[in-house]
Length: 221
Image (cartoon, one colour):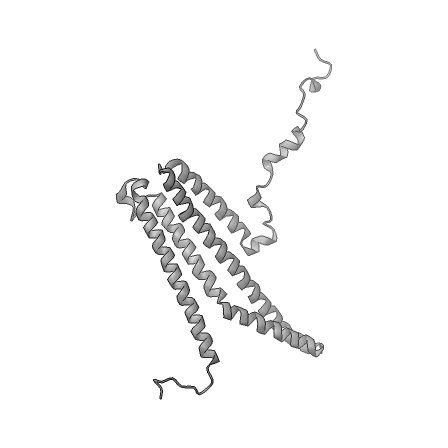
């Protein structure tokens, strides 16, 4: 009988370092402290959900190889693309909005404490620049529009994966795949047209703002 029962069963050299790995945070869970205020937790959840849908599509749909590649590009890649776009533009929109609010509210305080004139002037410039940038780029309208497009493609993909209407009559994912591609392309075309219309409205509003007071069109004469 061995003198020390505990030493009779040798442990792996890295046993202590491997044990905590099971409870370690996944990469998607890291950095969710302050960043969750900017959608970090929601983004991690959506990333995990997208990965699960991708795995489901690869294993259970019975698509041909080229159809699987097209599904990856037209559903998952495009959804992630639009999702990253609207989130980045929303982040800039919120940042400019917070700057405008905080600095504009600080101007009365600067005046009350008799701050140097250049401080008040600088605060006014910052407010004017942030407001002008948001209005010029229409960031609020842009991120909402891109989010609607992302959600529309995602919803169309869910209907296809679950073979709900308008894909129920096809019976299989292979048979419904051409219709799915057509619907996704229709969503992208509508997105492009709406985006151009949004930019045209912004340009028209800018031209109207630059028109001299009292100027009239041919119809008014």
